Structures are given as structure tokens and as C-alpha cells.
Amino acid sequence: PTAQIGVTGLATMGRNLARNIARHGYVTAVHNRTESKTKALVGEFGHEGTFVPAATAEEFVASLTVPRTIIIMVKAGAPTDAVIDELAPLLEEGDILVDGGNAHFADTRRREVALRERGIHFAGVGISGGEEGALLGPSIMPGGSEHAYAKLGPILADIAVDVDGTPCSTHVGPDGAGHFVKMVHNGIEYADMQLIAEAYDLLRHGLGWTPERLAEVFESWNSGDLESFLIEITARVLRAGDPSQPERPLVDVIVDEAEQKGTGRWTVQTALDLGTPVSGIAEAVFARALSGSAAQRRAAQGVLPGPAEVPAVGEPGGEEGAGGFVDAADAESFVEDVRAALYASKVVAYAQGFDMIRAGSVEYGWGIDPGAMATIWRGGCIIRARFLDRIREAYEKQPDLPSLLVDPYFAGAVAAGQEAWRRVVVQSVQSGIPAPGFSSALAYYDGLRRERSSAALVQGLRDLFGAHTYRRVDRPGSFHIDWSGDLSESQFS
Ligand code: 6PG
Image (cartoon, rainbow, N blue to C red):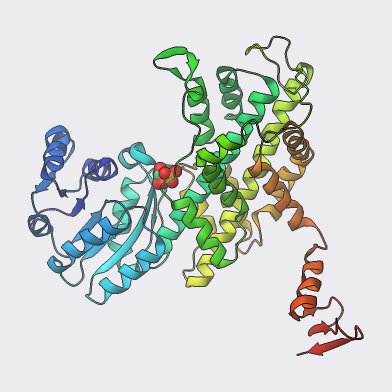
């Protein structure tokens, strides 16, 4: 056996990851269920490093030095279980099996226990950055035992992207911790994209500007606080023309129904169990679902009226021939308001995501360092952004920060934009352009900052109809009113 590490599953991500590993000087065994993909990889990219192609799982396992390190890069769910079931009987105690797919963390926990019983170290590793990241340097979120990480960590640090000399890979925690953090990363990715889409929608209809002109707006935003991969690619998508009719914007010919593979949904499902309000991610998942409810949307068109009068002022005969609901003279300040609303809403979405990471870490005893997650998300991954450096600093200053929103930097940034944020939400409501991300983020912000919440009434109602009791602001214990009698109060505990 000669190979130092093996990759099985050579679809786009697996193939690029294998090439990345081989390019870093590791002798890399490669295997795929259908052998043609293995041959194609070695035929096309064999010169990039030393590959050891294997036709069968047996050959693949036999080609690896012991203890073996194998990375599985197949679809989450049943295909991953099938590969594990095929490989496990061929492995020996001490071997390390890595799942580099987008697995559900609960599956990773289950698999880790089952394989541990056989003496095999199972590491669930989140990998972000798409095809290009896998090849040129992804952000990596490795979970699993310290033992597995001792061997795996240096390889992952080698193939991950570097930011300021720090690799975007660090040990997240045991068993499912890596896949949990990757799941939340994807949830934040959903929220971030939803907010960007709302900003685009409001700008387009508010100003009546063409996607091409809006591309310039996003480009300019990308040199400020919002600088990020997602803002950068927003400009690229908006600038693109329809290849079959280049003067028509591409964004106008793409069917407006968002699809999903499901990691955002998992984030929200898990957040419900943990009791963590990730409203930004939930709005994003539901907005995708609404966009995909084609039959209902068709039925509602022309039946459900919008606001009676949406003043169409905008630029007289603006670039699209139609004005928007914003007066042309106010265009610049509207753009700035939307930018501020996007930034503030984004801070809320990330604050909620980081709260969820902390809640998951407590629930499962993972000991995750949130600042370290911000550090490894600075490069390589889909949500990479300048902003993450600020998050890293916030947790560095105060590791037990109760919410990102109260960190002095973020509190100040959101305070500076909150009037603009409110104006944008009002404008979205008045013009009938839905902005669920912006408005629910603002509702969360207001819910967080208010001294007294309306939940006191909810508690009163619960006590009336179900004797569920309430706590008092002025003394300890739980209390109940004799609602059907003399309204006297009794105390329990
Ligand atoms: C990444 C991406 C990646 C994938 C998403 C797409 O981090 O590289 O998040 O994992 O592109 O899962 O998700 P949806 O298909 O659910 O939008």
C-alpha cells in the first residue's frame, strides 16, 4: 500500500477535493462506484499529483497505508450509509473514515457511535466553497475525535484556504459538531441570500433601474462593510444577459421558484428543537417554499389586490421606461437606506446563527468556540465576508458574548442604520414588495431590545384557560388566579 489518503465518490466535489489533496503532495487513492469517473480523473488530471486509482472498494482499501484515512464524498443520506456499509467490513481498528458531504449531524452522531464500536474513527467534516473551493481551498469544519483530528487536521489545514496566514479549518468538536456547524453555515447562507434578494427587489421596483445598473450598486457595496462573496456574485448575476437574447437580463428569464437541497430546512427544524429563534433563516426557507408554490401563486394573481396607490414616480422614463415608487431625487438616499437595512438585517441573521451554534454546543456538549467558527468562515466558504473578521474580534474580546448584537461594534453599526432600516420596512409594506427577511429581522431586534415584552399577556392567557401559572416580577414562585371564582391569587412552589 502506498496511498496516504483516499477519496471515494468522484462527482464534482469529490473529484476537486481529491485533486486539491494530490496537488498538496499527498499520494491520493481515488475510487468511484462507476470506474469510468476514476479513469477520467486520472486521465485528465493525473499530472497534477500522485493518484492511485482503484477499480473496487477492496482495491481501494488495500492501496492505503495503515491506519487508513478515507474521505467519503457522496450524497448525504442513504448513499453515504451504502458506502460506509461497503467499506466498514474492509477496514481495521484505528482506521479513520471521514464524511465530507453535507450530512445531517444526527446521522453523523449515529454513524460515529456505530463505527466506534468497531474501533473505527468516524469524522463528520463540513466542507464549504462549492466546486471551486474544493479545488482551490475550501473552508473546512471538521468534527470527530481528538485522535482522528490529530491525523486529519494537518491535511485539512493544508488543503483549506488561508486568510492572513491562518487556515480556514479547525477542530470544531466531537461527533456531529462539524456537520452541525456546516448546517448552520448553510442556514445563514439561505438568510443572507434572501436578504440580498429583498434588497434587489426593493431597489428594482423602488427605482425602476435595470439589473445592469443595480449590478453597479452591488459592486459599490462590495467595497464597504458588506464586502462578501455573495454580494460580489450578486453583481455578476445581475450584470449577465440572457445568452439566447443578450439584451434581455438573465435574471428576468430565470424561473422565480427557489429550490433547495434541504440544509436550510434542517437548520430550522433543529432550531425549533433547541428553542433558538433563527427567524432570518426560517423566513428564508419559507420564502423559498412560497416561491415554489406555483399553483397558489397563480391562483392569487389578479385576485388579491395590492396597495391602492403605489405612487410611481421614479426617474421620468427611467432606464426601464417605468419609474419606481421612489422619487428620482431621493434615489441616492433610498439606495443608502436599503444598504443600511441589508447590513442590519444581516447582523441579526448572523447573531441568530451564532446563538444556535452555542445552543447546539451546550445541548450536545461539544465545546464549540464561536470565534473560531467566525475565523474559519472568513475565507473559502459561501458566506465568506469581511464582516466575519468583526465577529471573530467580538468573540475574542468577550468569549461569552450573550448576543452578537450587543457587541459594541455591532450594536453601534446597527444603531447607525436602524432609522434607515425602519424606513425601508415601511416602504416595503406601503409598496407591497414583500421583505420578510428585513421586517422579521427588525422585529427580532425590537423584541430583543424592549424592556417589557407582550409575553406577559400570553402568560396571563395561559393561566386563565389552562391554569398554566405565571411568575411575578416582584417575588419568586409561580402563581395562579382563581379565574372562575373570586380572582384571588394562589402561590405554587
Ligand atoms: C457550500 C454550499 C453547498 C451547497 C448548498 C446549496 O457551503 O459550499 O452551502 O453546501 O451549494 O448546500 O444548498 P441548497 O441547494 O439547499 O440551496
